[in-house]
Length: 204
Image (cartoon, rainbow, N blue to C red):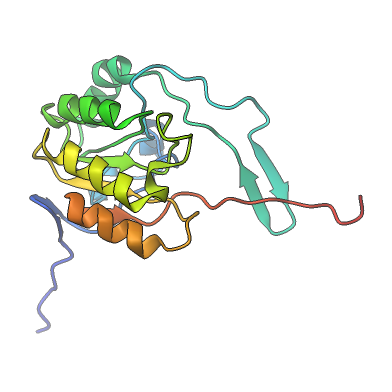
């Protein structure tokens, strides 16, 4: 007989039954109609922000001959709504929940991580460091290795739950950012968020 190999994976102190999980932003509770959430390794809802945000104006998606370009913006109903309505809905499933968060400053990342890290239904936190740092000239946190290290180190001090750094691909060397995130306390990496893109009509 051939022994069954375990599909489980470890992210810090969190054990997933398998490595299959959705990408944040491409997954919502309504998808339970087409898949069994309990078969997933983890559930990763769309990134949320501390305060409500409308996201970008429509149209947000542009079809091209080679695919599509999107400019969604981080639409969010805010942290209080997420805690009151979203977490209880996902809490009914067996699969662990990874909360994905976006923030305008390191202080805001720390504040949100401390709140969510102490919630009974949150098993890990994904830090979307590919969002703009409003205190750092608007550049994404994940475009600077020193900022990435500082952010991860400070968040690590306020929570014990596993941390995942969601990197931006729009850098010269993503390896440097990945190493900085790991040194700062990241247990895993999401590689990576969406690529910058442009569509040009060569005839016009």
